[in-house]
Length: 271
View 1 (tube, one colour):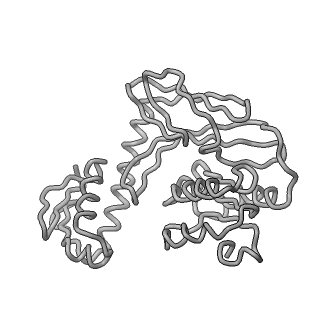
View 2 (cartoon, rainbow, N blue to C red; view 1 turned 30 degrees about the vertical axis):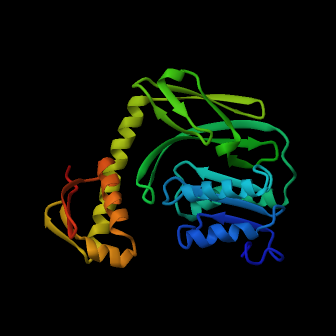
View 3 (cartoon, rainbow, N blue to C red; view 1 turned 180 degrees about the vertical axis):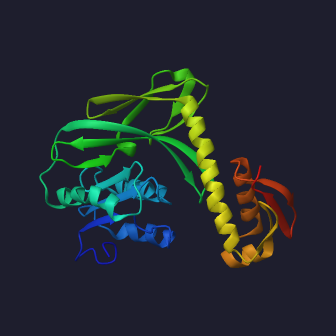
């Protein structure tokens, strides 16, 4: 609505939007939004596709909207697709649209997160600093903060808060925003345990999804045969894309590829 009728609607609170549906069309529509519009994007970490809102916030910032003023993104740790989670953020929408302008940082809370993107088939470790301003509004800083790993030989961090371990030592990360600094220590062992738990959860989701598909047959317990041509017809993708997809998921330990040829794939989730 705000994109196609921007002369009428200048404000939008987008709580858990389904941007994955018609993603490319929505990206194009973003260019129609005037830079003086106000948009708040929200996604909980227990929902799917929450990388997309990060991408859209970045696109709108590149377009000329001012992050922290008329474009905000809030990524809620443990937030779900529910009225309870939306109720916890709704005050921010009203403050952004009608509240007084923020000037000073009150506090920054830093969360470490493990995200898995089905679209990209990869795990991402990141820090999510949420700033609280003096007008009461809260939002994720993403690219607006400055990140620094204090024990530099043990890891690397990008400007959007994504990080990697280069050793088995804990990481000490400094976050700075408008002169306000705060540190977080990321525990290596706890992070590895978190990845293992996430893989177990993803396997359950994948098993549920496979049970719905007509082109999949469970030939033994947790072992599935997939008819590749039927996959390509249903999802309108190329064979090269799908095979690469399977190999990425195998690399992320979601399953083991037992056999792969032009016609069929056999995967084992009990790997």
